[in-house]
Length: 156
Image (cartoon, rainbow, N blue to C red; front, side):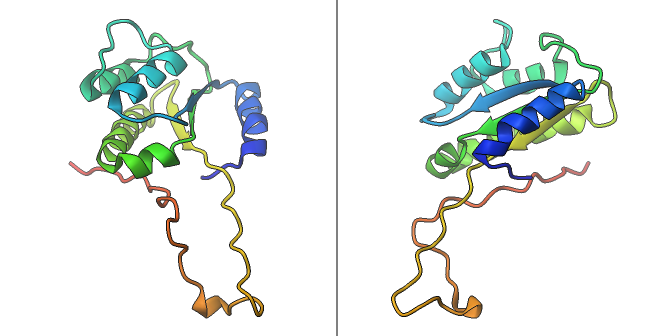
């Protein structure tokens, strides 16, 4: 699911009203793994034992005893992620895998965990001179941001 900047705050408020603990993880300006880990630590209020590595982050997201409990579950909204995903695709892929494994771990358990990748509305493409191009002739814009990843489910 994708949310636009204005609807994000009401969506988080609705999740809180429904009894979820909500956290916004803003990745705008994150330049690498160390920045990402610091941002995760600050936003998620990770315990001090969580180091700056993927395994420690994965362990913390499966524990969640440090995050206030909520009867309806927990929601982490990740915003400003496109720049990091485009600049560091391998790190982004690993981060998404850590998030997806945590969501899979909590699926069917109480209180649960959901992760939302939120992004701004894409800028409309300017119409070329001479009118709009037919739909069949549309092409991807050069330098377009990376596509929104689909979280995959691991088997086995």
